[in-house]
Image 1: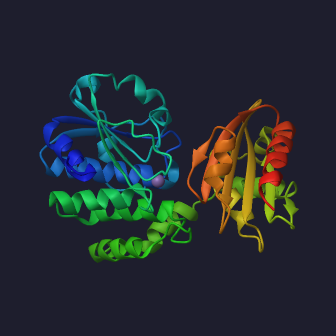
Image 2: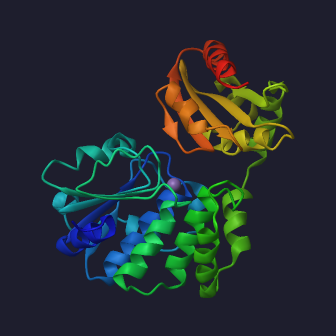
Length: 321
Ligand SMILES: [Mn+2]
């Protein structure tokens, strides 16, 4: 039996036209991995295009290789192989799943521990800090040299998923890969500025208003707050502006679990979990039908903001001593 990476290489060699996609709510790991894979395929003489259900977020517009997001000259349905990156399951790709009929082959490249191996070939490594790390391995395995553009995409993927090398998934291997990427004349400060320092004044107003609802359970080390549609309106901010709020709560001394309740629309509440040390945020999200990593996870629940907040906290207080 061939190893997972060999099986993926076989599928890449077999394919002629590839559709590359990732999860809804695109972020750095998804985009960086997609664009680097598109470049890898180009170097192998293959056609590919990157097609996502979600639009490109503003803070990733600095990425190179974005031309792979342009509509291809051939029919969109002409691909024989789909590469799905950074998705634990097939549903996470949103409406793109309608294009990937049973006749298409699927290559699943991911690092989520709850990946359900939906691909024809599956390269899943939960010890990788980012899917970008696995893509880096594919370049080495296939003997395709990196260039500055690809190095920047993979670097962004890793920075994004390690929270700037702060999360527990950051390993010696992560830093070894990064040290190789930095040989391509990258400017780390540019990546950090784009990902973490492009905020609008409206976001700061929203943060101020949201912090008024900050609650702390010192005994259990839990912090939580909520962002309602009303606050979004009052501050002039958008849903994207809420990005990073949950990490701000986790940065409070003594907090092991931060929970953000976000009203994405009426009776639709997105719950984000960020944890540290012995608290498995992924397991907590799975109680409510969500999923994710050890330190970062989430779920979406139906109900009003106060109801959901009560329900989730009651459940979680029972799990954390
Ligand atoms: Mn990822």
